[in-house]
Length: 263
Ligand code: CIR
Image (cartoon, rainbow, N blue to C red; front, top):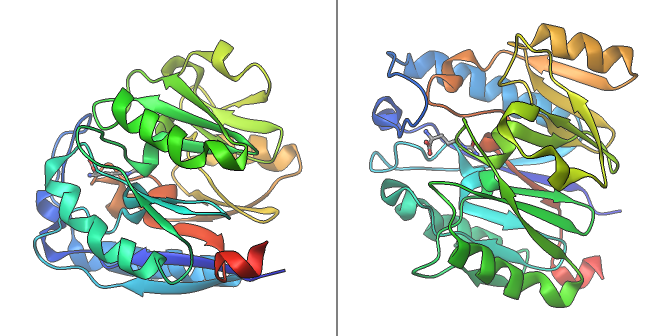
């Protein structure tokens, strides 16, 4: 079984000028954010990932949110075209690095797509229709993965930035969700596990094999998950969250090796 690779990216000094959609701007302590980011990487390493961090320039305020720049499947990597224009410079280096692991396909104009809108659950790929991801982008993603047997399903998102702010996978059959921000009938093939109603942003969780990496800001939902038997590691990412980033956004996790090794 190939090892899991986790690509991460530096926190830019310009993160203080990050994109914000649903949050008011608050001062971000860049050093504190970097310390939290390092803890995040250490947690991924403890859970078995080989962590590789890419550098980022001052012209990329949101570089740390590397999840939005690509979607990595076992077969190919799809490089996105972010809906946020300020984020488009992020993709070139991610494409270069991923080309060592997978054949690469690029989303092109007029398509827009951000990885935060793409939830892969088995052979189903749910894609949020949001201010960042349009129908042309969804269509290009469908064309890129169709021959590998994936079914691409456009999904409703309301009240949050990305689809994965509202719903992520706990295991192959169960999705952690805030039902207020999705159309639950679109996920009828799955069991929905509800976030605690006092923690609306708690539906974003990182799955690493049988383990889950989670933000410490959601203790009530964490307790529910643990009562159900899930193994949850919680870390403090409060400074990064001020940039409207959730915990999945800070890594691209995929099975290592080239496509040939995986087949
Ligand atoms: C943005 O608005 O693009 C960043 N400030 C936050 C991106 C978070 N990414 C994600 O949820 N996948």
